[in-house]
Length: 303
Image (tube, rainbow, N blue to C red; front, top):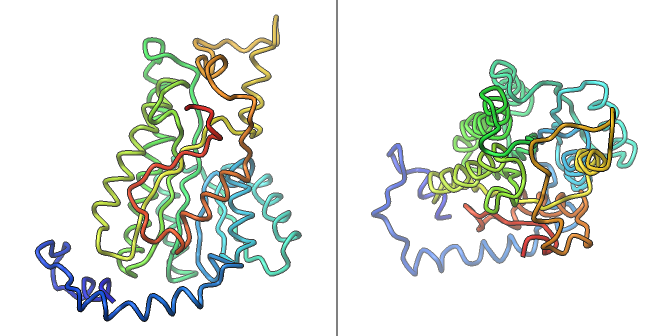
């Protein structure tokens, strides 16, 4: 395989001067055909080790469910132990073959991040898939975001996923195999939501491309998934807050999705399962030749 040839080069980085010949392509074609015939399309991540952050509810929970359904040894990470365990128990009840593990932590905790990846390496000896899903939005326009808000939301939405990617790459590059799926947002390319959140997601998009470039010629790829407005508990709470008045009102410095309310096909919803389907595809070998891409899943909401 071409990847094996690259892997055996005695250089720290890929030798960009080497180019495969037509003979190289012809040599691997039969193996590619055999792979296609034997691939398990019913369980597209069967036997893989997958790590999903923000997995206790919403999109992350649905992604964990789908990965477990398709045969992955699924590691679920979230901050609240009780909720995390309850979600894991629901998945196990749905699929008696599911291998689901939980690790309660805040993804912004640097020490816990190191402990998590050390535990993964010790228990499984590998990591095949990382889905960086944890994150959340801020309520600010650019001139109202104070230092604490900037620090918090950049740490949560950008720096924490960066650390997870770095730790995952240390494992994936060594094994010459892996898929990284960074959950971004449509706001990373068209900022309609909180300013800090949008800026951080834009950073995730560029970070995704930087990883993809680093991994060219290896068995590791990296892509970003950009959800539009999705029906999640957090999103519905934001919607509820817009209609509250008096003591129940939530003070916001900017209305969430102000343009989207009047200039989109907002009446066509996107659900957690829609995001999970794309995350599963990008984390599987079906997407092995896709890398460095930001793929939006928004049902045409931002066209």
